[in-house]
Length: 320
Length: 265
Image (cartoon, rainbow over all chains, first blue to last red):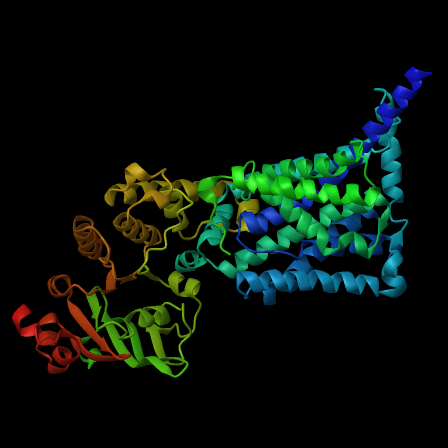
């Protein structure tokens, strides 16, 4: 009897950690986009959650309202998010960094409010359900395969695997692109855009490309987030998502794509792990303690290692 | 005036105006720069020399006038477009990229690199790598020439002020501009490095036919190295011509050189 109880808790724990792992993975992909903007181009994109929302909503709407196949909806939804990046970027990238941050927050707010008030088209505050039939099939197929190695009952495992595989592919691609001459121009813009313009490079065009690609990364995070909760609803894409993404970015190190994963994992395992500690406290106090701990870790990292876990001190050149 | 002595201008500026609020920083300035010359711009502080450079290279939008490079208007063009037309500049405080290596700084100066465009990266993987290798060879050659080759893999932030000016000049040479504008190339530079910079200027003109326009306060440098001098005061060009002619101009002596001018010459 006691053996069975132990196994059950162990399973429950594994499931729980898988859940936290999925969220950390979604945040990692989301933050790759922030890293491209903030860490490698020096543009303060605070509207990333808005681009994530555009991607997720475009996917769900194309599938539910227009009866598209998910395989067609995903690339088109990604293009929609990139287009949103251009629409926000063309006016906002002419602003100085602090105003750019404000304008992008505003852009994300507009997107969220439009989603809330879109009536039956966007599902309003209730959001959209039932776009993930294809994913359910894939999940069952994967669980069947996993059953052969005794993991058939780990229901969160398929999404966990897909999320982190996606992250690794994107990480690899971005790392390669960052080492090309194109990536070199971005890093130069991050440091001193007049110097880059004086060398005959169209700085504005590079910033737009950076923002559009970040928006695409946000959209990918949006798909995985939607699959995780089987729902696309406005509150999932609040500005908090962007702020937590920034915390992960700073923890992992500005200017390191791999650091993004470390930062997000650390953040989420601390946030979720606190729940496991037996404390003589009420639930709301534990929730406050979670954020307090995250704040403490951020402060410690800033004091002990201001460049973040994987950041390079020599490359700390972000302009305020 | 300025244009009288110039037979083949590479750069022609006419009646250029820039207002900052109520202040006319450049107030109808007219300059012509002879192709293949080394021309100096002098004038007291606040005369509008750097503003003139910023206007001509597109970093500030002019409020009126004419700017022509090789007879083509570049008025109100963006800085990157003007640089691509073959006129490039340095800055009073050199804008080297400190968080990048010296070699990376150089490679950034390379023109026509398909690897700098996403489409080029995806569609011409062989061509951009070949171009990158060519640029790397060019860069190493220039670094050796500017005696910066030992620092190629160091972060540019570790260079001295004079070395930064040399790097900034070497970097723009990567895309072989026809006209180079230097904003106070000798200010804050060790005299030995400053002398090197001047020598590079003469050598590049001889080899490549590059035209130079430079702002400088050091009279001896200007008088001994420039073919032509443009004198600015209060946003206007008050005199232009050979050093010998400019030295005799009463207006110049009054506005800029002061009472010591006769002693100095």
